Length: 215
Image (cartoon, rainbow, N blue to C red; front, top):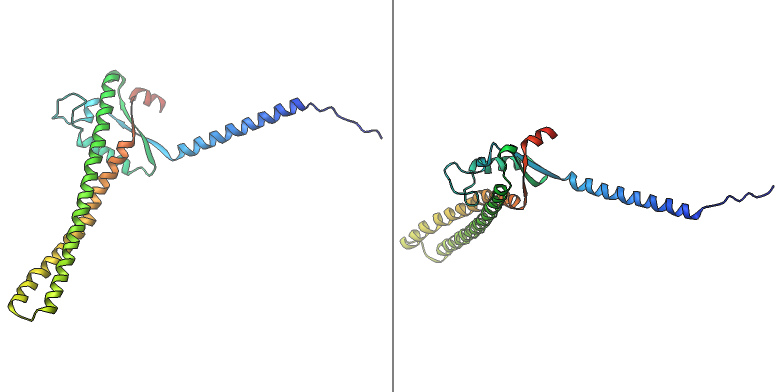
């Protein structure tokens, strides 16, 4: 029985192998993109016009106007209800009311506002932290002083007066320090994290008409 040798086209085989490698690389890239997008979301807010972003009592231009508390509260509530990291803030405005130059000014104004408030709350956080620690140290020193007076001085009028002053003052400052370090610091920390997230977010404007059409 004779051996049959089948002709092999090595060039075609290499081309086929290269195609398989390219397809595999493309699939890996798509998988990485899907994984990255899985954990990122955008936040969309509907606006009747640009004035919804700003205070009704401030009539300055869009680079200087004060951002509305209602707008910030809406952002706060929306971000609180999102478990994933928000990368993009999309402000939806009717196409007929859009102006590209105005939108650039508003984006710059919002970025400045978020960054400024992040700086303010960071300073307030550090100030409260130092104040709480200082009060706690003073309270401990007062309690130690009260203990020293009790041990070193006899039970006379002077020692009684000193103890009456030191002991309540020590306990008062301890509770004040706990209040600052727990309650006040916690509230400031939440605002600090809010404005840190807002300062890092990318802001875009989009037509609400096209958004409805895409939905």
